[in-house]
Amino acid sequence: MKAPKIKLQEISTHVALAVTFIGVLSLTACGGGGSSGSAATTPANLSAVQQNYESFTLASNGGAHYLRGSLLISSSSTGALTVSPSSSLFTQDSSLPQSPATSGPQMLTTGMSTVASGFAVPTLTPDRYLVNGAVVTEAIPAQVQVSYVGDNVQETDYATDGKTVTMTLLGTNYTNVPLSGAISASPSELFDDSALGLITNTVNGSSLYNKSATWQAGAAYMKVTRQVVGDTVFVGDCVAPATTGNNITPCSTTISTLEAFFPFTSANDGKTYNLSDGQIVTLAGGIRAWVANTLMNTATPEYRVLYQNNGEIFEGALMKDGTTLSLFPAGSTTAQNFYIFLNKAAVQSISSALTF
Image (cartoon, rainbow, N blue to C red; front, side, top):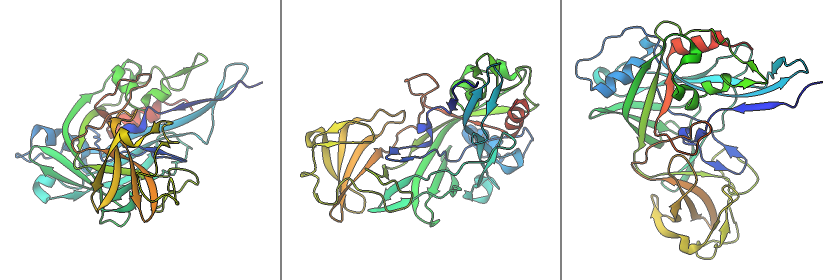
């Protein structure tokens, strides 16, 4: 007789700019870095930030790898573990063809790869944004242009049309950490702040990876700190039905003004908002919107937004200019202002260590 199934999911996805709406939870991450440990020529005019970024992100160094996953596990009466084939453990990959310092702005090469043999890469749900009064959908695979601004790294994300900018991020710190020895003896932040913690959980006394496994030569991870450039508004379905394109489900089709809409209880965060709980502003594109005075309960600081458009009321969330992207480490409600990418050697080490 089998025990109940256990589902292990990755840490908070708010690091990936996720905003939760009815029926939609986006699990994306933009840009990043990863290195196989091979050497590449570094332009002399790079800042330390840009050098660290390129040491992971240049295609000649193995590309960028952001680990994600969701494991559905069952155990038998004898304690044997079975991982459902509907589980996933994968990386979102990106690489930089050339250095922007020598070749100008570069488009990242992006994609996804499974880490666990036999597991499919899931279909991701894209984020939606309000840009100049119109809803646009991010591109999957991501379309990201990288340029250097001062000493920093700027990444510009585009919508499905390849032209509309959805979000711009400024990378201000990239810290590279080499890995060696047993995977089980790695820094705790690697388990707490990345999806590596999924496989290092012990289930009914059994392990999901070989605890004697070691990191391959050249394995490393990179801690990334980025800020949002410009106010950014995420949007999504206020109520059912769930959608995935540019036509999101409004909160109301009969109330056309914000003043007449309150009080409002959001199905997305369960909170009741009154008109006096925020301020009415004008967003880019002339959109009239109400923005809450207090933050939502998210790792990356976000504010609830309601806006009126074409006689309807819609819901969203605002990240203000300069906001640092953050995540909740596993088991913690204290936000961490960096997130982790692996290089190619680290990903290969993890794949080889799996016991499922």
